[in-house]
Image (cartoon, rainbow, N blue to C red; front, side, top):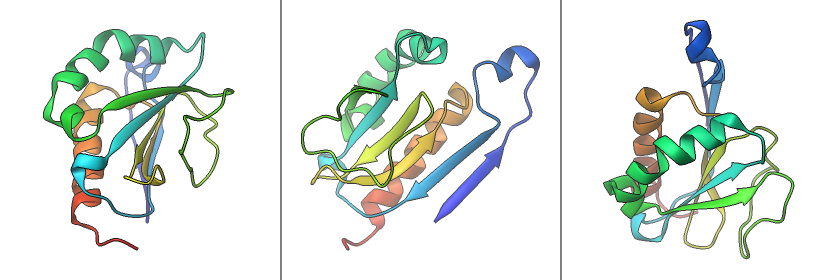
Length: 133
């Protein structure tokens, strides 16, 4: 399933979001075994802003407890045991990983705090309710 949301933002806000945010579903897992992989790169000011402003709140949130945040560099190796549907090409990209390290869902780009939380919640909810396989 692929969903795309087009967002119209003021120029300042547009610098912090991508116009198209795609969600791609591919699997299922229980929430206790989920992880949220953030693909980032040096020089990505959106990544730096996320890590500064959102990551601490995420880590302390129920979402962060359900799917702890881990990081990987866009051009570096993936964490051990991680299997993705495709190699990310945009930073940041947030990939929900199941218990086996396989990609369950994906959020490409950072659509801003007001959109990030609902999308992550939706990703976690889908992973919780979808049967394995």
